[in-house]
Length: 340
Image (cartoon, rainbow, N blue to C red; front, side):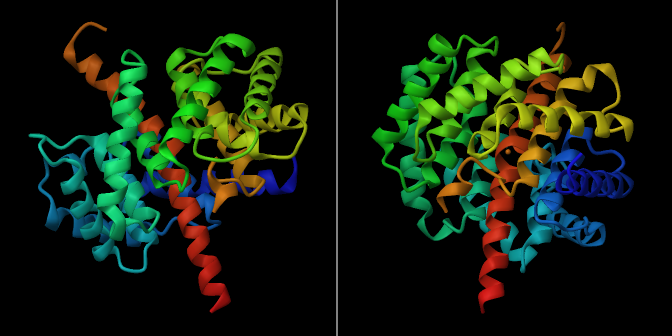
């Protein structure tokens, strides 16, 4: 394994263990998401600061608030990495209030969208971003009503934060989706194909080439008997399209990272193999300095099972959209401090 990749894997494992000790009752995927954020900026998890941020959140939001449910740990991580955790929280709450306008209950995906807007320093242009965000989601829902759901809200926020024109974003997204579905003939679900198309549409470049690179990588991993997800986790391959390396090299590195994580008992159960491969793919992207597809330009029988399924989709969404956005934002801030 290349040194750059092993260092990322080791730091992720160390951060995940530290976060697990501090927050033993948090869901496993949430602890992984927080660990990925710290790992992406090359830092050890500051669990004491996370604890302080949790006290701030508890003062501001009640125990049954959506803020303190599934999205709590990613929000605490964002607060911990900010210079002013309390102001960070107030900004997210203010933007979320505008996004939730007209709705009775808080929506966790909308809270994620609020985090993304604040994270990219666009809270001062929130009305403009929300207008674009609403238009994007409305037109996405009209075009693909059976594919578009709350899971797409954070993708819509990311697209709204880009400087690309709304019509161009939607055009590129549709072209990517159709090309992946009709030309690449992958086994991934339509929802997964839409998700990766949304990621590609945030950036300029040759979208057909990106689709072909991801399709080739998907097939190579299948050939290597890797546990490739055909669902939401498939979107984790998106950032890899930005890397100037042969597909065979990337596939081998993902498999190596996956084996290393398994050896270190990260998602060691058979049911978590696809999740572990998703984490491995993200760590490979991080080892090349890529944290987001947009980085080149500037996360059943009863109601309980349904809720659990929904939370899993939400947690994967955080790992694929919110975590990369935070890394991109933190990296920019560190560069700004370095030049002062």
